[in-house]
Length: 290
Image (cartoon, rainbow, N blue to C red; front, side, top):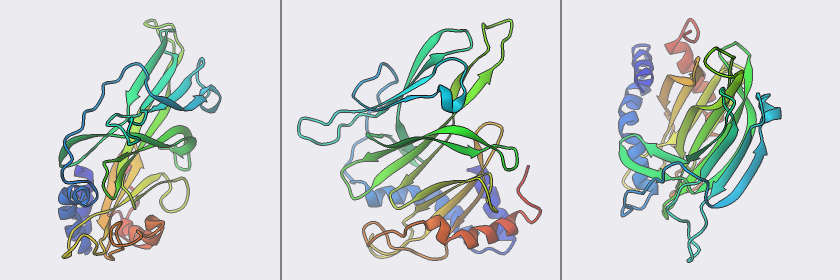
């Protein structure tokens, strides 16, 4: 967040008046958006600890071929079962990774899929797994890519909207050393991003934003009712040695329909691409930081 605020400050000095609005929105936007889409009476949710898998198996995948792992690695994803009344339970989906570590021991790591939002103390259990794919993401090498496991899971609290979180895992090789029986490896979560419905999340492998991840999330800033059009908060991240770091943030000058006021626009990132590129030149006239 400090990187985004710093980028916005530079944009303000470069003559971008929206930068000042973004710096204010970054603190209050996500919380206000939750008040728009979530029931106001919702109590804090319980987050189950990682442990043995439970629930309904929704994805079963071998990972060795796609990631060229050392030894066989396997993925299993579970969703919590519906309540007897047929509604979504207050439990998190689980992702389980099984494979040999650098010591040569087969281990299973089960992770509860949860989300938090800046400014809100509640932990949201992501009950629904929307997609599980293996796809290339950018590396620090210009034009480079590596396979990654992308998992999207969502939370519904019974209101008019949802939260969606994107998880990104990559495979890390470990060379043989005197302290292990390697070589081996493990899967590591390198990035995550949370948006409300109507938002968008994209990796870019080519073009002016090559090597970047961009998210677009609508925020509630002004208007007499919650159905009034609202702007999008755009964030740009670049790949670092581990994960991604924020390099740019801005608030759109144009307001778009909201979930309650109509249908949010499709492809908000593409719609605002020209402005994102102008902001990039204003903040980084000599190119992205290295």
